[in-house]
Length: 359
Ligand SMILES: [Zn+2]
Image 1: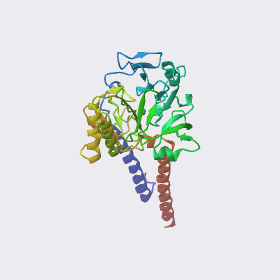
Image 2 (image 1 turned 90 degrees about the horizontal axis):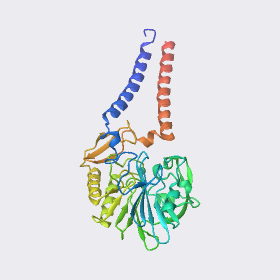
Image 3 (image 1 turned 135 degrees about the vertical axis):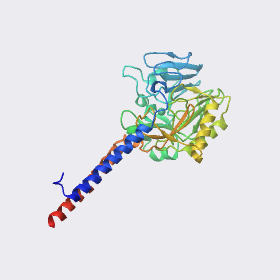
Image 4 (image 1 turned 60 degrees about the vertical axis):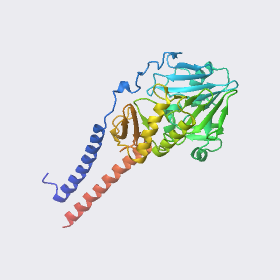
């Protein structure tokens, strides 16, 4: 290396050191961030592909259904990577389908709309618990959906449509036709059956929960569920303070006599679990919890702030965020940063080279 001038060598060393430090930091973080569960035990008492309850049965190679009563159905996808559940609530005049499926069904399987229509003779309306890609799978099978009238969604809507971006579907950007806006707190009348739609931000700002007060059911989407994959409070729009407040309000409006259902893992949990999540989320919001470095089964190797209490895990904004890294914008930023760093060092090299040869 003696043919390289001393100043060059210093810059080269600094450049290499920076890159190595960055790599070491990322590797160390992802090595330290241990998954707090065995990967096949993420869903607790059930494994991928198994039925969640003795009352559930496979209706074909992909879907399984459990009737909670004569008009309430869990439509499960036990073979999906996140063990998804969607819900069908039928009244005497119409039925409400909560979520459009995981988007992971094989092409040979029916759309979730066809499944819903096989369970009720009433017209099926779709409403999403929130707009993440793992709940919008069969959106194209519907003419549109009821949409929660949050300020953000209202501002995004144009010409009666919502433009969904690639993070909100598995099949690329597309338009969702808004059949009707539903105000937070509004009651959907299904005919002899009334469903309260609550805005429950926290996991996503547009999260909705659905309450049947008469039958004492709560359908909470990804706002609340129970499995070792943990609750996700790190996506854009996530906020632990808001999350804690909203769980508290939902518990006040429902309580111990209600049955709760989530969108991932074993569908049903109880108010005690919701109360435990409420307390943990509040601890996080006021800073009395002590998060550690962890990773979720959704993004192995990506270090996240994790708060764990026994079976309860909550993930918060990470050192490097998965959606940030795994989007075109994220990759673009990363690439731009690399180009900028290289350009700066390149210039330094050249300047030093010129001043050297000028001497
Ligand atoms: Zn989800």
